Image 1 (spheres, one colour):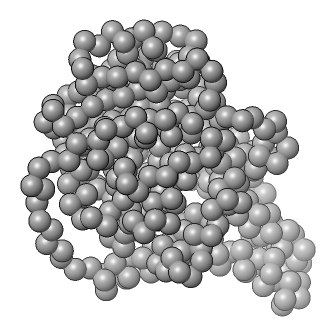
Image 2 (image 1 turned 90 degrees about the vertical axis):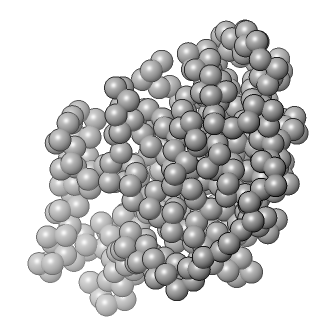
Length: 382
């Protein structure tokens, strides 16, 4: 392998991946330490009004518990409303919502198929609160989560607040893995810079004035909302004390979810890459380092495999090549491995997740395009 080929096909992608996993977090930690300063913010003269907005499609198994969870928030009742938006549901979701005898609970149902992003736009218009908490029907939040999330809006420059996401098993115990802990810490550091980019639609607080309508065919509505807030000059922060929980799913279900998100990532790359412009400063760096490199990891992995395969006569590259081959061949084990043995398949889970990215890109490029995107991932709880 010539020096230039080695650099382009192996060391460049390897370097980008090492930077993504280790270099970026270390730089992020250094930057936050250098820029960290205590900021005294005045308390609210009066707690802001809050709208909990739930875009739901065929959620009869979860919607009642979700609404009860929201009504139980430790927040003044006269400052809170819960609105549910649905489109063309085919189950009892609308009936269940209408069954709540509480004036704070409102249903906005349309009969035609609009898609989640269109429903999110509708709920943003209908919301009366100064702060909107967009959240999914199968997510549960701690009783103090609303108050803690809203507290971060004492800073007038904050447009988005991301809570801590925790995945639990069927018994309700934490099922977080290394990846979840890594992601939460990364978002916490990004949030200290006002550039927390890892928004999830599971739950996110949005200042209503920072929200702008998103295209109705948007796949990743959470990503589009966060980028829109950045473009309007608002920051995004992270609140580790604000806890939201969702169930951990099997690798097969997670594959479907990741593939859908990957389809949305391809769309977001084409629509919102302007966020990488130098005028966005630190936020542009964070987006590139956290999101954009990851979107190209499947390409980087193929480059490394090809690069090492072209130089099998060199002991180092021969070993690296066969290690990659073994990792790829054993990746299907993630579908059948249970318990503590999963800890031995960290590399295989990483490859499995990137296979989902490839599936999503394929769907985006060659799949059937619809005017709406509302394909609820089938859960084990279904």
